Image 1: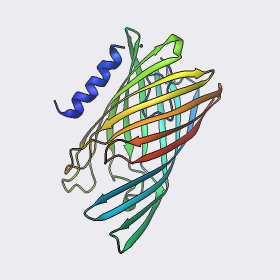
Image 2: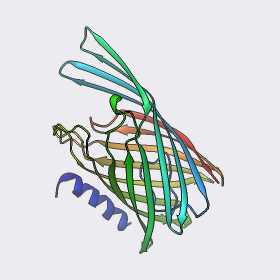
Image 3: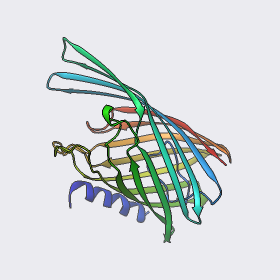
Image 4: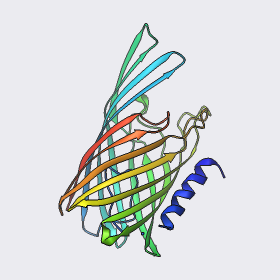
Length: 268
C-alpha cells in the first residue's frame, strides 16, 4: 500500500471511530447529504489564488481569479444531481530569471463536471454516500483549460453529526481516471484523493469549518503529494441564503501557496 492509500484509509478509519449535517462551501470536502426532491441549490463560488515557485534560477509568480456556478437538485429520495460550470476569470503569470521577465494571461471556461450523489446507508450513526462524476471537455484545450477528453471518477463520502447537527465530521475518498488528449507519459492517469473536514456551530446559523486533504501528484517526475489545509466560516442567513468565506493554504510545494475563497448559496 503506497503512502496516499495508507493516509486516506487512516482518515476514513479516524472518522468511523469518532458521529448528517449538510456541509458546503468553503469546504472542499463533501458531505453525505442530498438535496430534497423538488428543491434546488445554486452555488456562486469565487476564489483568488497566489503561488510563487523557484526552480533552476527561474522564479514564477501566478495570480489566479476563478469563478464557478454549481446547480444541485434532488432527483429522488437520497439521490441528487449537480452540474458545476467553472470559469477562469484570469490567470496572470510572471516568470523571471533575474534579467528578463515574461508575462502571460489566460482566461476562459474550464471543463464542466456532472455529479450524481446517492446516500445509500447509515451505519452506527455514520451516513454513507457515493458520488460518481463525469468531467466534460467543455474548456478551451489550446490554452490549457481542458484535458481534451471525457474523464470519469467517483467519491466515497462519510458524515457523522453530533449534538443534533451543531458539530459534524466529513471524510472523502476519491478516485479519477484521466485519459489525456496528448499523452507523453509524463502524467499519471490514476489519481487518488483523501480529505477530512469538521464544522461547529459557534453561534446561531454561524459555522466555523476546517478541512485537510491530499491527492496524487499528476506529474510522474515528482512523488510529493499536493496537501492543503483550509479554514473558514459559513453563515446561514435564512432558509434560502448562505454566505461563506475561507482561506486555503498549500502545505507542500505542488499545492497553490494561498487561496482566498468566498461565495454564496441560494436555496429554492
